[in-house]
Length: 165
Image (cartoon, rainbow, N blue to C red; front, side, top):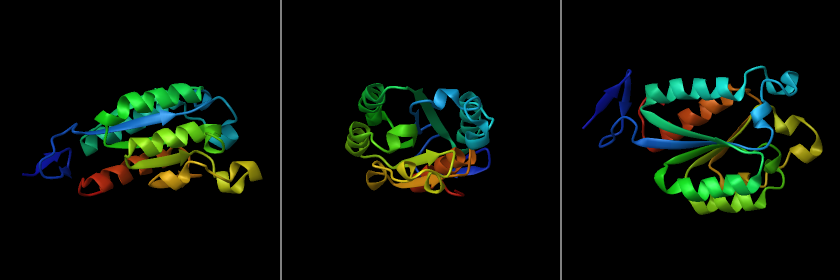
């Protein structure tokens, strides 16, 4: 069985909206578009989420967005939501470098997960260059601004078997 949605083929047996992805943003990402736009860009997190929603519709995917400035809230969200999802996009912000409880929660979720960074963390200060999360994630996109989120969503669609991704 093949379903066509907005010109995209869904994997056999899947219906539009079957693929559910958690989009998680960590500390200070609520200030995106306002905080250091020369580094992080001028789009707000709401703008980026809107872009993701539009792409998700064309891919037959459903998204749940969550942002918190507190690591424990991110862990609680993952623990409460991962069972109903098929993938994760996460921009952990500064937790990239020291968020060990977040790392454990991502590993425990057992889902394909893509780490996204608006700036190129590998070309910035030394302390920003290492991700404690990366070893338990599927991949990382850094330095491509808001396009990184869209690429991450396409990567998860590809992993899930959505043709054309």
